[in-house]
Length: 282
Image (cartoon, rainbow, N blue to C red; front, side, top):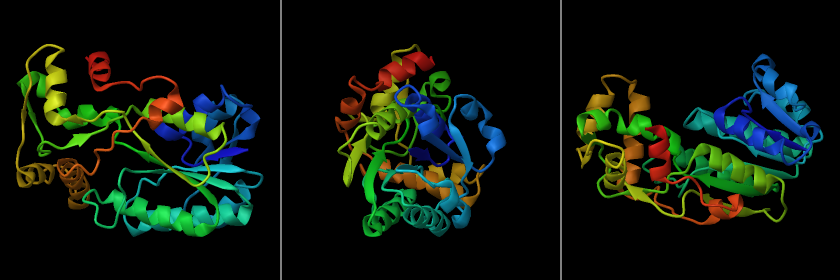
């Protein structure tokens, strides 16, 4: 039996939609905070169970009979996020789960500029020490967030972002979900670490060039990080602005530049490319 936490979120739901084409729906468990939001999953024959990261006792009950668990990282950051992940890992051990798949990030470390990668490092260490079999899907930044990052560049002809010449191996969230479903329904992934992204990486100059192919010429302008942060603080709380600033700094220093063929191998086809995504978006 396969269970997925955060099953009403984008990645969890997409993974379940691929899984129902590969295995019996009644062997799948959607762990959700609010079952009322998972009516569509239940209609597919998927078992819907309450699974709250902050309620370890309920998690133990809801994980009964589960062999493989996908721990989709919490939406929180910092110590609260790591604590929630600890609850899930401990509940999995108590419930007899054999194997945990964890959605991590490229190059997690305690020194990461992108602060969520620190949480991922700590969670990976917890899983390594847990005695459970683990698989880390170190997911790249989603292509899906690019519209937010490029803003109105196609209207103004200028893409402002403080990434220097840094590159990212962006991947479509749906491709990652399909790759995860394929890994969950095959064997041989115990205690493996997979870098999940495109087989190539793109800089923001590359993104500007790809945007230019769809109409108006777009120029990439590398702005100071301080200017980017000042603009963010006009619209966002300081902790949120810090995360986005850290992401830009991580890109600039190539902390998210991890091209790898693994996702392509899981899919059995090339993942959606930057130009394909932007063309479809246009």
